[in-house]
Image (cartoon, rainbow, N blue to C red; front, side, top):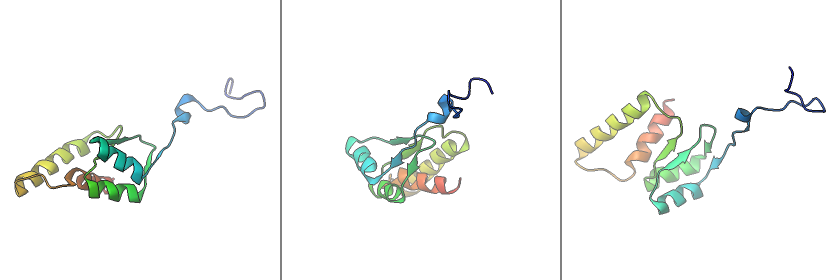
Length: 105
């Protein structure tokens, strides 16, 4: 294919192939907690098991970019139902809901 090979015949990847993958660790989660913010991760990012558990323990929400569709509506419905049932928002609710929804995909 014309234009895809460099001077030595090596394949040159397109811009879409250069999306970096990050490994989200416990430190990322703790930084998000300290800053009082949701931890946003890209579609190729990997959340370590320890980071996911720490997020659940601290109540830090992990939101994956591009996450849309029924899971966003389902997440809101589950959150509202839990708060209605308990009469309050329990610590770690968002992280627990996110963990369950991730396990379903």
